[in-house]
Image (tube, rainbow, N blue to C red; front, side, top):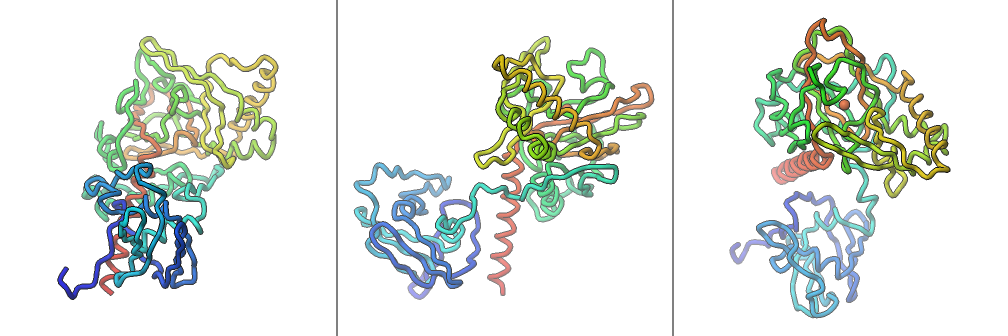
Length: 413
Ligand SMILES: [Fe+2]
């Protein structure tokens, strides 16, 4: 910067991009609270201690990692504001005592983290839309044929992935079509979203009838609606099933929105719903060389009473170990839920075509399969697991890229 250049906006304590939706018009403060008045009339209050720990300077954040290095308890006293102003770049400049430290704050970042006017900061990235099935229903389906030809993290990749991520975050399900059918190609496709979660069934697992199966999935029998691996403390948040071959008779895929079923149960039979959110079931996956067991309610809610996960797999339920007087009511609630899972109004049914990839929230969606005639052809799916965190992280990266483009475009105008 030469002597005549105006100051540029300061860095933010993260790697994100924060468009300036409104300018700071004025600032007022006392020792512990600072109030900003924005150009659109909003007023935002910030505590001195909150501002101090969220500064982006090198005494607060390691510039190499953008992670905090400041330990608030190491300050000689509670940070207080002795002066505050807006500089020529539009940044907020604050002088803190007793450090006598002068720190600058990015207005876009301050506005985006305005906890005085915030909604629920933990609200889902994409609103949850529960859905019902029926004979005419089908999953959101997208052409993904060029996905592996795009540059990773490019705008072309984003054009394919962004709507897919939105469907998974909002509805728990998407079907991508037109993907390669080479065995193993699922790994490269999945890595476009994030790292895979290996399990005792492998990084990728083959869903096809095979001799000496270690799961009902590896036979040609029907599978009831279920979530995979409820036997783990954290059962995988996402599952992907990639069709390589399908020439059998039968074997239709069935998907249900577990949140829609659970919500319907809450309306129809609140006592059964409450029982299934409280009583712990045993989930067990005991094989010749492994022994996974976990205890959990069948339906879990978050702190606001919203649905967090369902954990349903009848063939993996171990012996119930509930309090004696709760056993009959617990089985009654289970059977009420099981009867609802058979209602055709909840289910989407579809047939896999080679090159299809279904991505679904394994802690929300239930998947099932009709029996198929193993000698009528070949049915080969490859699958893998991933965590919900990966899809949320990937979607935040999409949002970040969109904000960067918006800022770049607005600076060219
Ligand atoms: Fe499964």
